[in-house]
Amino acid sequence: MRAPKYGIISNVMNIVILLGAPGSGKGTVAGKLAAGDSRLKHVSSGDLLRGAIAAGTQAGIEAKGYMEKGELVPDALIAAMIKDVVAAGDAGSTMLLDGFPRNLAQAGILDGIGANVRAAVLIDVPDEIIHDRIAGRRLCPKCKAGYHVRNFPPKVEGVCDNCGEKLVVRKDDNPETVRDRLEVYHRQTEPLVAYYRDKGILNTLDGMAGLDNIVEAFGKLLAGL
Ligand code: AMP
Image 1: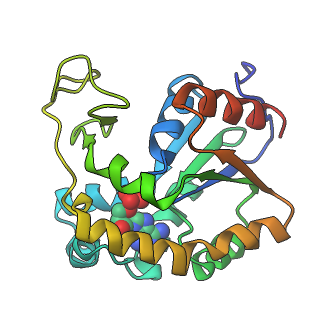
Image 2: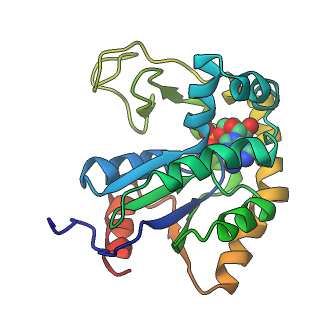
């Protein structure tokens, strides 16, 4: 087996959970890491749900209203999707799980299916920075690459570097919905920080350190697992 760039060799799939507020950079960091190592897989629960909406599946139809309001979709709906991707994961690979779990009940579901959660990584960014970051956020609807008009711009304005698709603003990235999503984060998701700290597997990265530094620190952390 080819040695993975970012360490971890195992005969089961490893899971590394990404924690952090919306706009903290979880998806961008995970995307960069996964692009540099074929045995790292980035799974975003938000992308799975947006994919289901685009495909018009029953789950997508059910999820749409919650997402547009910045609320969490029902646990059972997202858990069913996550169970499928975890079950389909390759032994020896590592899944960077971005956006799941989002509350303590979901963390319990992940533990209940015997998922091999090796670490949780919190990307820590103050709320006041989050508003500015999300205001400039752009997304490729085709390959899901994320950009920021100032901090991480595409080479050609409004166009995806990877696939040439026209970039879009996510519907739930408007200021009112962002306020609601941050409130949901603090109330429902932040308790997971203590949950994984108590398990002894929490790591915290400074989300203000700059993308390359965060990716490097995260890579070292993975190599040390
Ligand atoms: P994200 O792309 O991670 O910011 O997620 C966008 C939206 O999808 C969230 O505001 C929620 O409505 C929904 N969502 C994503 N992941 C979950 C989850 N684990 N549980 C419930 N809702 C989720």
